[in-house]
Image 1: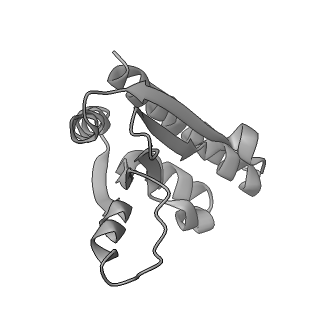
Image 2 (image 1 turned 30 degrees about the horizontal axis):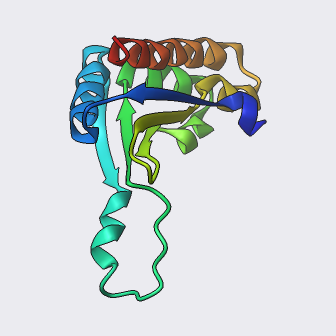
Length: 140
């Protein structure tokens, strides 16, 4: 794997981080994915009073975990070990300047290549196309 080739990062202009999170969540669901969990990494800010030298390198940071059971079934059926990289994730964040929102994700095909299965690559390609479609729809 190569981080520069296998991790996609997109930049978005948004009025508010919260509005962007709502928009991307809706688009994920419209593509028939279920949001499994949203990890609020930015909740670390609430610990500032407890840790005197806490350094925080972002304004907002969330990890959205999501899954389409049909695609997951295809991938796991190709190789039962495939579950180690599921559910799929979007890292959604703002840098300290808070001017833009960024979304990064690992290409599903990058992980599927590890297994050497054509069946898994096909399913991973579907997921990757959906993820790109989600970001394209949010960037209207």
